[in-house]
Length: 368
Ligand code: BGC
Picture 1 (cartoon, rainbow, N blue to C red):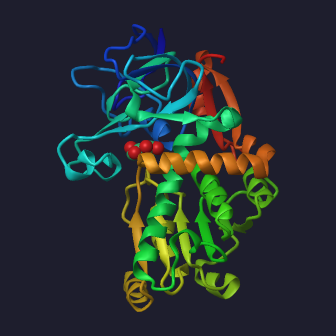
Picture 2 (tube, rainbow, N blue to C red):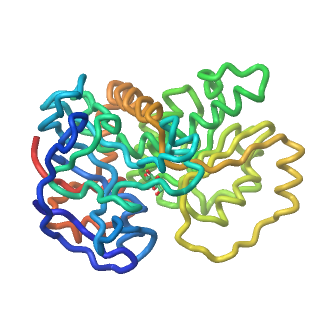
């Protein structure tokens, strides 16, 4: 079978032949890959950035945002059957630390975890994959068309869930599930993660201000507005004026991956506010920030700033539940999040493709 493989640390990416995988244990699931989304991590990998091949190999099969259909299950697998849609999660624990031992490899302490398609394990840009049933997440047929968004949605869900957990632990009046209802959330960067976070925040009753630097008439702001968000043009709005203009900002979700903006945005955060960063800046240069003022503000306003990566099984479950609710509420709009579908033979176009209106490009491997 074909797979899209990269020599990590280079820009050499090509279609290569690999043997089709078969079940090797009674607890495994085999899936035929339908489509795989491309994200910033993949684009960074194929530019020679962060990527590690499996031990002893020269190539890494890329791709971690998959949607597949089950073709086979081992005799010890229950609740999964051929014909089910699903995804495999990305991270595999180190097996040593307390987080990984508790099925929370997203919080791994040793950094010896692996990630399919990113770090030490082949990914999903291929025709068939096999993995253990514990990493399988079922995707209901009702969300088949947007099922490939499950993994990026799980990343957004974790970041929001972390904020809810922390706020409900430290603020006496907060009931966890309801904290966002009526609160103002600022989402910085309206790529796939930013828009999916906006969806999850709107579903929880938050006022969502979505910030980007594209024209208000273009696709991403229009999707934001269709789900009830308000667009803020980043080049026409001074971060220092945010609170005067929009009132108290309770929650900031950073999904732009631009370090200077990421730190400067702390200024916009309100009293007892919480700010979660999810972007990974490509640019590693030092940035200038008003450190003294920001630190004073964080102390005097009891603010929390944290980073969030990857997702646990619970966050995948939240992702599925929210994609289902969103499909009922904004079906056509949700489908517009997938802007381009490219057959795997044209992978070069998918990896290179970027425009203001691009949100999620997916590579297609098989039909249902
Ligand atoms: C993936 C995560 C992964 C992270 C760090 C992201 O693009 O969605 O699952 O943990 O990269 O490698």
